[in-house]
Image 1 (cartoon, one colour):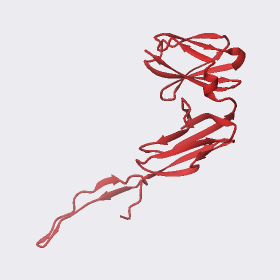
Image 2 (spheres, helix red, strand yellow):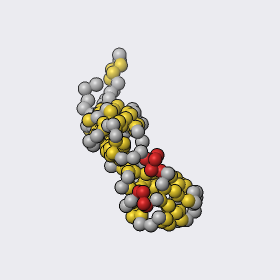
Image 3 (cartoon, helix red, strand yellow):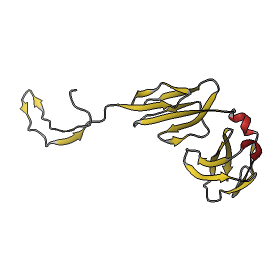
Length: 196
């Protein structure tokens, strides 16, 4: 209609009839909405791709799926959506009802498949109310760092794992689902637990 997006305007009206016209109403201010599109910036580290990539335009309220493909001999290491790590690590990600600009980035790593590494890590009791024990084969996995995320990807805690069995106090966590992400010399491992 010729109006600029994100701009302020004033409007006034009057009635025009066959037998005459009225006076103008008082001015009424209004602001036009946004352009109706947003940009999702998609990037990938070496040894893999994200599809689509670059600056991807999405209509307001629309959705867009991104797929991650590691090169031969590599696996997905980290997925960041608006700089927040996603756990467990997905092979694709879909933005739905887009109402703002976003970023998505994926990194890849070589190493052993996470499912194979998972057999060397145990969490118990699961579910738990206060403490959870993390048991791992340190001879196989080597130096390990543990990060705990909530189901929304918020980092709750970071701690080094220096023993075969580490007791972690989660009594201050709200009830819900959490993910333990281990970075080992052999690769990444994710485990899920429930806090009651």
